[in-house]
Amino acid sequence: MRAYERLLQYVRVHTTSDPNSPTHPTTMRQFELANKLVAELKSLGIADAHVDEHCYVYATIPATDGCENAHALGFIAHMDTTDDASGENVNPILHENYDGGDVTLPGSGATICVDEFPFLAGLKGQTLITTDGTTLLGADDKAGIAEIMTMAERVLTENRPHGKICIGFTPDEEVGQGADLFDVPGFGADFAYTVDGGDVNEINYENFNAAAAVVTVHGLSVHPGSAKDTMKNAMNIAMEFHAALPAFDRPEHTEGYEGFFHLTSMIGDVTTAKLGYIVRDHDTARFNDRKAEMARIAARLNDRYGQGTVELDLTDSYYNMVEKIQPHFHLVENARKAIAAVGLEPQDVPIRGGTDGAMLSFKGLPCPNLGTGGFNCHGPFECATVEKMDQMVEILLNLVDLYRA
Image (cartoon, rainbow, N blue to C red):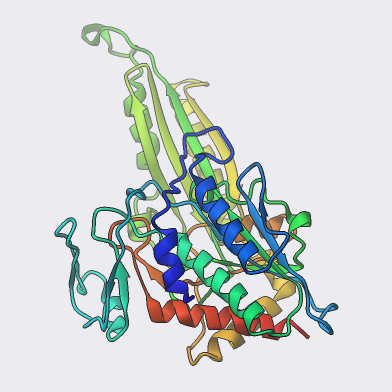
């Protein structure tokens, strides 16, 4: 079975995670795909395939004779989809011999325009996979799952020599919890790759350092007719806080290695106001400077309006994996070789976000990220191509070959 055929099956399983749920997994529906994958892995002859109580799928393909001393290599993808668009009742559509032009989605009437998404022109002649426009596709990251499953099937049916191969599928990546309960020792890999990116020639081993910030402003409400020198309007003070941050250090003005402050929520009245932020930067020193700047602004406002007026709660979320990858840079070098072997030019791309691999790297499993051939994730314009998914399978097989010695 080809990878895209698996994708068409997997995307029909509703696996959206829930950022507001306190359970692990955040939605029980993710078990439906997990159980399906375990059954499929067992049908391939992988006897130890199983799903644990937290919806993590694990499976191992033992090393072949003569490759027992090779490094154990892991491949990881996530089962959940984002709640940015519906992941239920997904209706995938194949556009064979795609002409490289605009694509109208029949379910919604919306158009994926080449002017807006120039990469589409480079997909001309391939078989494009989209939705009908009413849901996301779920290639993020069911394309990664399909490619890993197809790689595993090829390894087994072709009797390819290989070291120990460890397979893991996680829940709740889209809500930042995919690596939280991942059993790194039980997984059994020395190194791993997440397969959860964009184009198949991309390698990601740098990601943002990340923090979450909550700014709480305590005001004082009095009658506006007698408010002079007495009222403290929490909403106005909150706006002062936001205005003190650099106006062009926002996501809509940044790219590449440029970090940002991103206001994600705001609520309030005269008495109390709250601002929610995420803070991002690839460079650790600049990341720390950003957090320090928020603390300085809070301190200045407290000097102006009274101590305790502004409370700042900063919590680090994850860190740049590059420091954990650099001592094992063969992971990047071999990924470049595997990509070049299918006739593509490898491209190192910093992630403007985080991955399960970043958190797993800090848990002791060095884990850069590879592409899937999926694009426009987290929305109804999400798409992939059959040919790029096939290429990714070949890249994974090349990595298996490179690590068998």
